[in-house]
Length: 139
Image 1 (cartoon, helix red, strand yellow):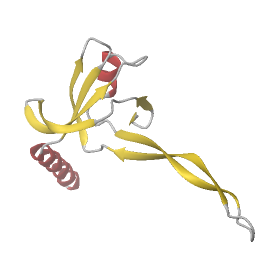
Image 2 (cartoon, helix red, strand yellow):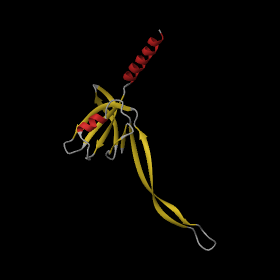
Image 3 (tube, helix red, strand yellow):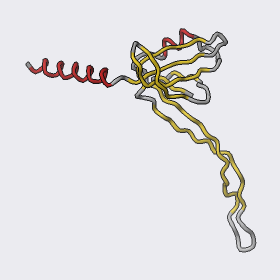
Image 4 (cartoon, one colour):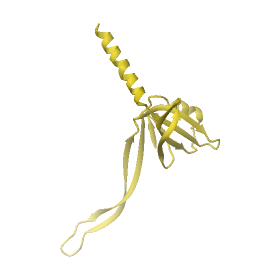
C-alpha cells in the first residue's frame, strides 16, 4: 500500500525497483512503481497524485503466527499455548523521491510510475536560491 500525502491510498505491485532512469532530460535515481489494475485508478488520477514534491510512504503489512498463552502452568499440567495470527505494519518513507517522472499506461488497466531523486545540481540551485532570499531579506 502506498500512502500519498497522508491521505490517498493506492495498492502497488509486489516490488518497488530503484534504478537509473532518464526523466526531465536528466539521468537520475528513480523508483519504478508497478500499479496493478484497481477501481478508481486511472492515468488521470495517477497524474494528479504523483506530482513534484509529493510525500510517498510505503506501508507493508506482515502476518506472523505467534504462540499465545492460553492457560498458565500448574504443578500437574504444563502451560497451554495457542497459535494466533498477529499483524504487523511497517511504514517506509520514500521521501527522497520527489521529482515526478513518467507514467506509463500499459493499456490493460495497469501502470508503471517513476518518481526520481533530485540531482546534486538541483539541490545546490535550491540552496543558492534560499541563501539569496535570506541575504536579500536582511539588506
